[in-house]
Image (cartoon, rainbow, N blue to C red; front, top):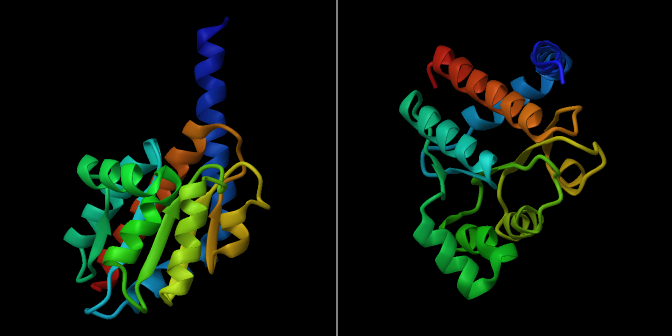
Length: 184
């Protein structure tokens, strides 16, 4: 294996992913607009699995810290294990939405595949609770469940988790910086 070639190719693929995603700037502006219209009594709920869970936490904290918006992620092991144990893993996110979500809230889901059952069920629950917007960040197949069922979907053309997740993180943190500049 040529390590230098691997590094060069990997960096190129990541940069290509960032560049291709730049063609979706209209969606990024739509996401910023949707978030900025969130009323002070409403919340933005963000979920992800695995690495995307960490990205959700980072985005949530930065958005809350740098704006007048209330964004929450649910990465405490107690909430995840309690709801997964009592309601099954594929329903733990739905349970959190049922417990903490309100009409006109915003839901953001980060899922590389866009097909994780807990994310699919989250969309269904958020619709029942009449969330104002459902936003998703996905990759792999552009015809995945979250792409089809979200109000706004930001899709990364890749089948590599690390490329997808790092591109999602790049754009989510860019949203934070743009909202901060907009003084929301």
